[in-house]
Image (cartoon, rainbow, N blue to C red; front, side, top):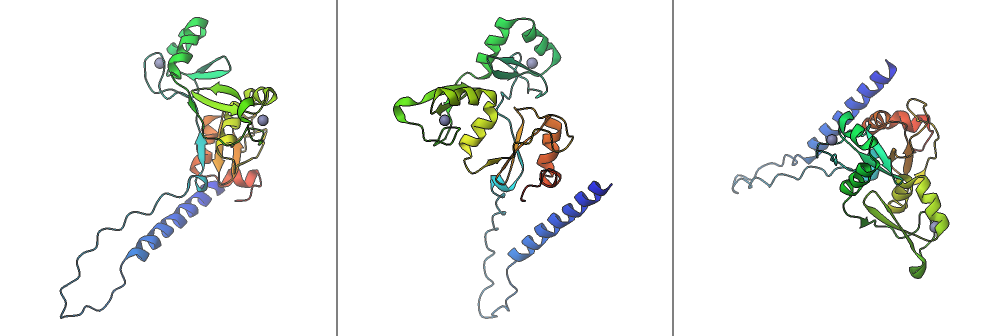
Length: 226
Ligand SMILES: [Zn+2]
Ligand SMILES: [Zn+2]
């Protein structure tokens, strides 16, 4: 009940913010000069821009969007792991087909991630610069990353999603929480969320989604600076 009322008051606050924002954009009521024609109606003011990505809670999903079996949207709870990468499918039937046939799973992986694009990262996942001649390239779910050495490749493969996110968002700090801040269950290394400068781990897409809607409980639980 407490959470609901908190949420309700937050909604009120954000409505109030929107309302005052809209009011602030109204032109000040200047007295009209009767000798001048009425001023032309100004072009409508562009709606305020969405807050910067880091101000909004975001859940990261680096998986395939459509099922390799029948091109339907995937269900993130249904997947097979192939060569350390995750192939998401749409249904139990599509899942069963891949689970009983390793070669079908392999070709589903190729279909899920047909190309690999280099991620925009200046440094290795360890934070070191990558020396041109010594870079070791890894591919994960359609993305390629350059790492500084073989040891970092080993580390990368333990939690590729976290490594990718930290490489592309060097301003983030990993909260390194071992349990889900919302339901206390162990985290899933493939489910991470971003809020401000925090990278936070979750145990399920359901808890991650409630974080995305309202990060305040997560921030409080992990005692993060908000
Ligand atoms: Zn399917
Ligand atoms: Zn490294």
